[in-house]
Image 1 (spheres, one colour):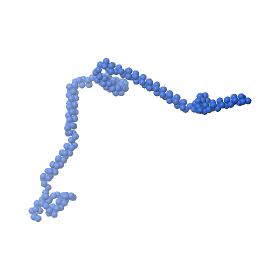
Image 2 (image 1 turned 90 degrees about the vertical axis):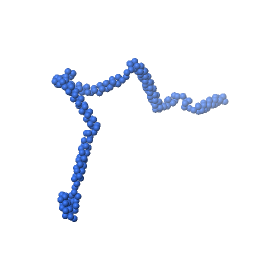
Image 3 (image 1 turned 180 degrees about the horizontal axis):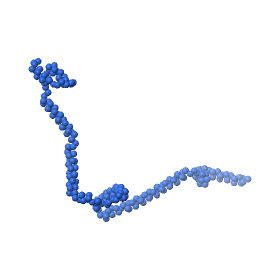
Image 4 (image 1 turned 180 degrees about the vertical axis):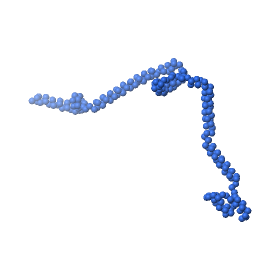
Length: 235
């Protein structure tokens, strides 16, 4: 190994650092091994890479602010604010005049002793807001019908007759249901009541004695009577 080469590499000896690859290269340089110097373009590349990375990070952080939809929303907000400011500028004299008045002409002043009643009135109006809104909705719904009252009268005329027919049908069904309930109650009461001996004796004997038995008993009774009649004649 030449002396000039050692002198040249000795001038470019990397700084000695503790630990890692830097310390190994420093030890190799002390032992006389050649170490390629760090190029300037590598440093510039690393610097540019770090700059690009930071730029990407910044873009990521502000991406939601620079999106098209966000920019459109901001433009709309600015347009609304601009319109409001224009109205304020055009009506500044009227606004100043109303602010200088103790109260507006279209308002009712509320004294301190009536604050409680005024609060109750506001609560009552707020509670009636739902009914008022429903009434307005019904009114708007009724405005959709453009027919004349005579046409609606003809269309609504069959409704009372139909309601009367339904009422009569309901009354008839109710009466029939009551009749069936009464009949069922009578059947249950008759089936549950026991039969007494007096009731059985008072009835017709045909339902108690078979026919052949009744005829046999009548024949035997007639023969007995005939035999009684023949005995005196023989004597």
